[in-house]
Length: 360
Image (tube, rainbow, N blue to C red):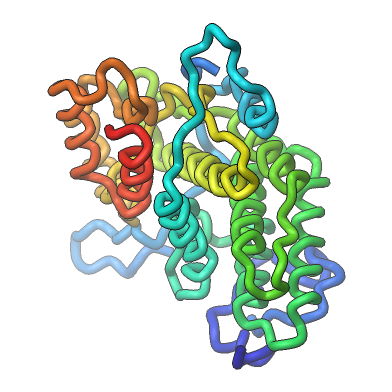
């Protein structure tokens, strides 16, 4: 592969993030990165005349959020055991049947997530733009952006060094004590998920270093961020939450849904069964495209108010895409189509996978 260390300088440097010192925060890196169960419980632009300032570039305070903690998160942490425990004889639960083309479809999409991190102002659909556009990027995500660039620009012969560096960062994330900051917990989980996907579908070293230990750690990190809540407090009363709270909870849900898809590929490759994630029953599906992509608070608040009206019969839940007695009814079909009509590419991918499995 062409490029090398110098080619990293052609990208927007992550190391310019204020407050991030790579020699201090990522000791051991050999390169310089450029210049400056059951349902869940629930800098401003210059002002002209009398016009209000454009607030699109104002950083959000993602530490000021209101979520509802849940005790069900342990079921996510223990999810790795599920393929080894077959349902009881009296249970009607059966493994999900993944077709080879469905697994290939999931794999192809997941492999693009790290590649999107190379493009200026682009993010994979499990990371919200507000997480990386503020005054100070979380350490886990700043390191992740730098290591992804090292990975994608690796010179032939340096593959082992690059993989070892990424594994060292993954070990740091795994050994890091749980933080009380929800954004930090989420960022660590997102970074570990990106690394796991990147290494699993690797062609650099021939064999993937991702193993059962990696997957167990991934689910542990998912548990840590899910434990603090997968719902905004306002969502449970069908009112508008703060933009900051919605950003964090939406990114959480997207990242956890992605982890489940990745686990399905991992299990299938090992001829292990996959089962419905009952621990996610009742969790809301990804919000509509406008809500996720808008960079203006006023626009977001206006769109969310419309969103509340559109879904005054209840927000759309992931379990509505699973096969049930209501599958195919006119009421369920209408809700599914209403949701599909508003989603971004991540929601459409989620729908496609569920349609392949559940005929929703």
